[in-house]
Length: 373
Ligand code: FAD
Ligand code: UDP
Image (tube, rainbow, N blue to C red; front, side, top):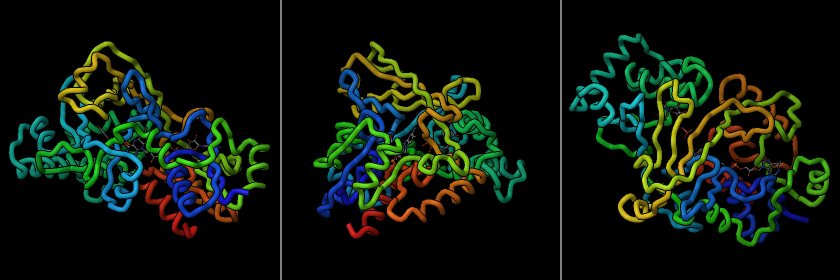
């Protein structure tokens, strides 16, 4: 018997497993892919840590989470400061005085605030009801048109008027000169990659890769051996999509190894117009190397173009679509989940939530506590 059979070796599963093992529990981790790590998996290509399932930058304001996770990996002091490329014009992100200066030539915070207020008034927005209205009310029409509208519609495959306002509230708006993308006390990338972090969390655990828990034979066997199951796959798949299929966005990554030291001079460049088919280009080496020495000394680089797409069965489910329709369907699955006595649903897919890594860690720690671990 296992105290916990943990389905999924992503961050949620790994943190929960670590807490359970530390409390002396017996765990088995099942993973349907051929490797551990879930979406934060990184692999070494010619000395460069490549983020295979999308760029991951760790950032948090939660001291408990930071103190916990840094016991399992050393983090560097990477600070994310993406550049936006709109038809060849470059702007700093997130929206700050550098962006406002490049967009309008304004020099002082007061001038920037007045410009935003003028544009918000002209658009007649008082209570923002959707992403478009929220964006215009935060940064004005010009920035919305050049830096948000095209990017967001490519990212989500939906009009900004059909998307919830909260998505854009993830981005800071600052009347200061500060290109740090995150309002976070702690930020960084594990110096040896995220896979190593997961390996350290799972140290000593029994792990079976290439094993799909939802395969009926596997499920029957595992349920028979588990006092409890922690399930971090898609909640609708657990119930055989019996109430309908939850929608996701997926991303196709086009990755290339190039024989040059420096392709774009930054880890992240967003292409914010509607016509460029990809949303951004990631140059992976800049996540782990400093820009002064090691990064430039290596005459190679790996880049990934990201093409978001509507998810269909068989694709990787990346982003839950937390609109009204999907949220209502999720609530129905959640109610079913609550009746499954010994199963805990966790993580981005199990809880159908647009969680960042720090929130996933916090949730897993909270769940472990609830379990008395
Ligand atoms: P996952 O990592 O998805 O792990 C679930 C695991 O369960 C997977 O390995 C899957 O194969 C396995 N599984 C599913 N079904 C089964 C089954 N039936 N049997 C066995 N195994 C199964 N967060 C940040 O903080 N910063 C970022 O910069 C950031 N960037 C992101 C970029 C992208 C493109 C995406 C998609 C997400 C990003 N995130 C970021 C969020 C981050 O990826 C998640 O918070 C975190 O990885 C979620 O961990 P998880 O364990 O819940 O899910
Ligand atoms: N966004 C945008 N332009 C950009 C970057 C982001 O309009 O150049 C919007 C977009 O809608 C995105 C949201 O801001 O979904 C949140 O951005 P974030 O970088 O947090 O998205 P992530 O890729 O982490 O989900």
